[in-house]
Image (cartoon, rainbow over all chains, first blue to last red; front, side, top):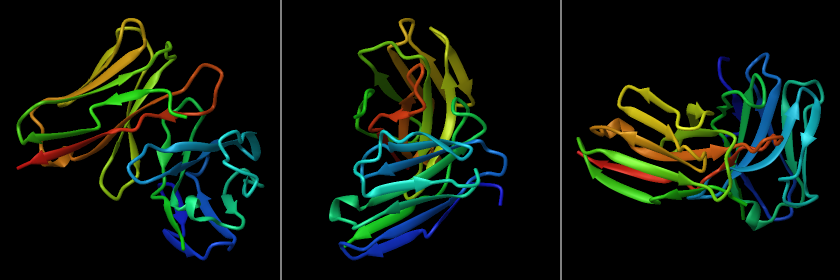
Length: 113
Length: 111
């Protein structure tokens, strides 16, 4: 497709369950970002990949959060042992370079019950 | 945490009125980006400002970067219902990969 694709669009998880969120960036985009957006707030940076290399993971809130981009294209954000405070929209964005215009996906709305 | 402060948090205007949102930082910004997020949607890039005192226009939208590069503004002339959404400024500090977003200004336009 022409844009950034994220799946699933919605995910309901029971507390303690593991979840995996997928991001398909725009083809050829070197840079990939993950953001977390709580209701009524701006997106908060989680992690950054340049191709397959994770160059910044300083925004990941705990060691329950893990992201990978093994072949420099599709990325997966995994959250282990989900907790209620993990409920948010998780946004993926890609760009030609980290300083370039970022294209966001529609996001995955995660609700932990 | 978020480094840029945006005001106001909410703005309700009558269709046809002008609208301005401001982004302020206590430190010098290397650049500033503006995004629009429609209700239920995702952030969409509008513009990037890099130079001190820079002014850019996109139809009814005017973007400005302060002379000291510590503030920025987005002005919409004669708002339309299609302008409804939340406008975010975002800054990337020199040497950082992170784009830090403000909390946004939510614009409502009354027809």
